Length: 219
Ligand code: AMP
Image (tube, rainbow, N blue to C red; front, side):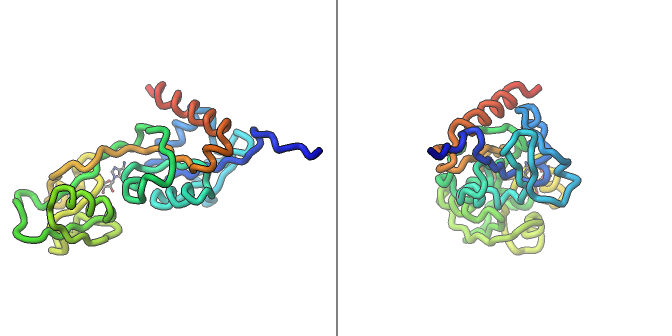
């Protein structure tokens, strides 16, 4: 009789967000007992074997992590809550808050500008979040999609307000803007593909437990 593959031999792919989140993610995974076999930050490769057999890490832009995980090309992902809120959160399980890369998603506008007469124009890369936020506040707003350098939009008269990530607030201040409304507290989360959670449950549960312990024991 043909032998069924051992559960422990199923391959697991973890999609990591590159950039500042990666710098905080790798030490956390290391404490959970998983480390890439080469230096991710020094390599041009995008997928890496780890010290755990059959567990690989891929490194991509945060905005692409939900897509890889929803379609099952990656089983797990590490991604900021801002991008999950923008993508739509029903597509996967979100079992663990890693508590890293903390920041706030806020509206901001020119210092002392006061309420804008008439319809507000808002620039953001988070167009879905911005639309939901202003609709929830009962404010008529036209949302304009930009991909970066949002702080320029009010200076150049393209928008009245922006919706953006704020950490220290230095970027806003340097551009004559001030934070207005808090939309959400942000940190990076683990997301899991729904089918993988069923098909590879033992392995994924073990991994999540190790990561949870690593988060809780962070000094
Ligand atoms: P700050 O000047 O410290 O308020 O940082 C704001 C800028 O840094 C924003 O334009 C964000 O794009 C970026 N930023 C800060 N924290 C994060 C984070 N946790 N994840 C992604 N981008 C961030």
